[in-house]
Length: 78
Image 1: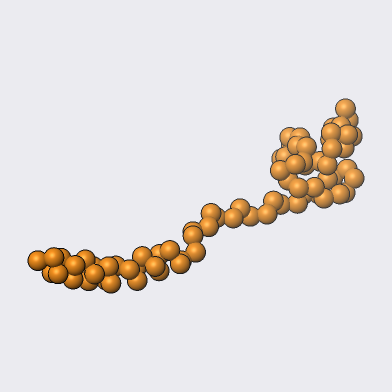
Image 2 (image 1 turned 60 degrees about the horizontal axis):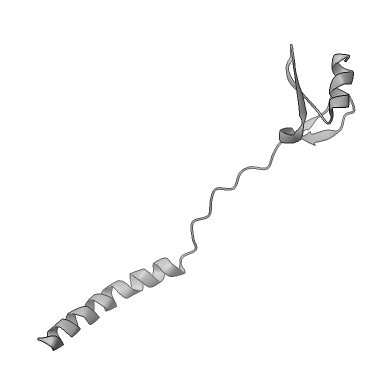
């Protein structure tokens, strides 16, 4: 009886072990990388700035992006 149980356990391990090893060896799913941030051109000093770090001002033509509050002030006349 013990021998039969041992044979069943070994058979299950032999059948499942390759699947478990493949899962462990497979690279972990990587989180999706975000796309690099877009560069936008400052209309005052003509420099490029990363959009997420730019100073923004709304205008009739849409949102304008500036490298600094100083350039934004020059553009709006402040």
